[in-house]
Image 1 (cartoon, protein in one colour):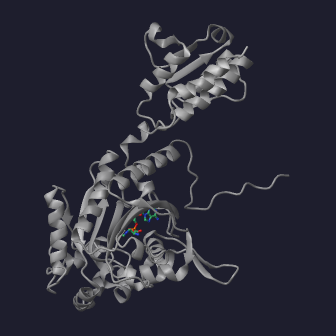
Image 2 (cartoon, protein in one colour; image 1 turned 180 degrees about the vertical axis):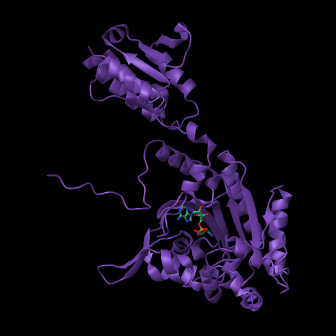
Amino acid sequence: MSEPLIQRLRGFKDLFGEEAAVFAHLESVARDVFRSFDYEEIRVPALEEKSLFSRALGTETDVVQKEMYEFVDRSEAHVALRPEGTAGVVRAYIENSLDKTLGHAKLFYMGPMFRSERPQAGRLRQFHQIGVEQLGTHSPYADAETILCLTTYLERLGIKGYKLKLNNLGTFEERKALKEKLVEFFASRLKKFCPDCQRRFEKNVFRLLDCKQQECRKAVREADWIVPGKPLVDAGIGAASFGHFQEACDALRSVNMPFEIDPFMVRGLDYYTKTVFEATHPGLGSQDALAAGGRYDNLIETFGGASDGAVGFALGVERLALCTRFAKNAEKSPPLMIVTMGEDAFRLGFVLLNALRRLGVPSTMELKGRSLKSQLRVAERKNCRYVVLIGDEEIQRKVFVLKDMRATDEEGRQVEYDLEALMNKFLELYRNHYLPEQLSPDFLAADVAAETKKD
Ligand code: HAM
């Protein structure tokens, strides 16, 4: 009797087919956009020392207290799967002396993150983030540039209808004063809050401000010194970071980027200082945060680097995929298929396939030697736009038949080309595809020409 099938863990997903294609599309557009903003890629490990995260994110945060996948490994080291990307990037920046060699570094990353949360729509235990971090700068323009990098990316993907919210959480010093004010105000009103908030009050009073429960939202708004439309730190503590935030907002206004200021938006991670922001999308339901980020001016120093500022954001790729309209247009399959009949045709087809792929034309071919009918069926299933037909007769006449599967008129449907004309036709059809500089189509055609000349 066979063993029962081992199934994937709850909150973990297999990605394949259309969804994998959408992910690849999102990643490739991210690389394009981030490079145009002068960021370069960094890949950091998925497993780190546990203390990296507890020190960076805060020992009392939900992520560290309840959600980290942590264990003691075989060498007795306390390790954790990364719940987010920022801490690892800061560690790598310092450990590899990028603070000394690059000074100001602009890095982007993408990959899986792990949080043991209760899975629901848009919330997984292994999820993916795409993020950027700009390290070694205090400029408020860096805050604005980071936000514009996010919005340009969303624009390039055709995502509309999202809302951009900003807040100023102030410096650690300013937050101390603010914390006292909040504690004093809410202490006598604690009964009005949900049990979670009553617990949070002890550990992090700021989290009361963004609780989604109706009763808590109402109770929080009794603090009429927190003014909607004005940043939180303005709330009566005369914050010096006011100017920084103002400049970042002005930079956004100078390029007509719309945003709201929401004093109730606080973040779940402790490292933030001054500007924080969040992009939400109404299509996402209760987990509506599509991307989030902000400034973290103390983190580099905490890990032994210079006393320098930094700012970044991360997007949830699963959530991004949910609100992309373009999912249908993502390149799902190679648009060109080579269909062959007979052994000589198969061999020639294989050489042509290799030439096309080196030209950057996405193409495929059945390598199992199936019948003409079933090869065409595969082309249809893969939704291939073009089919190149090669049979004995075509080899003798040194022609290739190009079939346009979407042409409506008989004439346009099937056209014969000689090798040179075929290569030119491909270049015309796929001119936007990658063509390696050092490879000319003539050079590639030579392989195919040599094969066609064999008798
Ligand atoms: P975060 O707000 O914890 O920030 O996560 C960023 C985004 O990751 C969220 O807005 C959401 O789209 C996605 N996300 C988080 N948890 C899950 C989950 N369980 N399932 C699916 N998606 C999820 C950070 O991680 C910071 N490191 C962002 C940052 C970068 N701040 C500065 N630089």
